[in-house]
Picture (cartoon, rainbow over the protein chains, first blue to last red):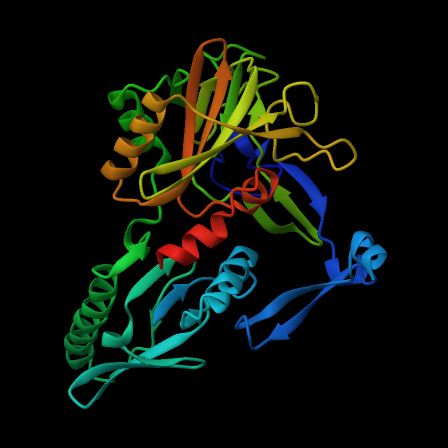
Length: 60
Length: 300
């Protein structure tokens, strides 16, 4: 395992079975589905803003 | 005033806040990157942060969700003075933290990091069925395809382990023997489960959900490998009262009043896996209509 990650010291066996995935930019990929907005009300910079669900559109 | 220690992008916190607003309860949300200075106003301790200011006495209850309270420390050029003043500042910070932890709270920053190995030992003492486990530096005593490995630490995500790539250490079945020794690894007997149970615990009460992950090769060993196309079937579930009592005993031992507990069911047995004091419970809450966010807001 240590060779896989160019480390001098030993690593646990869990590193052999690690699942690697490409780091995605959520905002880019789902730009038409969801993105974050600053929210004073909920005191967060990452308030998830979603487009209305289909069911809600039907009600409207 | 309620103090919420959380992270800026923690979605469950926002869901609880929605209920607090509905209940007209005042709150302060502190993020992981906020630094506070301890000051005195009118002989009372006053905390001044980058986003929030409040008197320590005004806090009536605390929800420790994630992150923690961090303080700005003054540095001194003289080494001796620096050591002396570091200790002085440490005890002031300690007073603030311990005073907050003595108030009505949901979990505490000081014991939010739990040791998986100690928990498993204690769970066995309490009488839970725990799959046989051991630590090893080689696979000599490992039964291939009948043993799983998981991390000893809580964080299973390795962000940017390679350029533009991250890694996730799921629970995995050991597929082959290793020729060389490795760093100490946690091994556990693989149980061919009937289904999994995730339980949310709050102040002596349990809310559970059964997860039918065993029929899907993708989710069989670790249900967090979510199958987005054909999701696992999840249903509300009630654990036997005796098991809920044991959960309560374990949580009391750990001095936790909230957390998520994982089990696997095989035949008549419920095998205890682990506890996560800061685990996500929104999926369980929504799927089973438990309104756990509301229950937290009501308690605070």
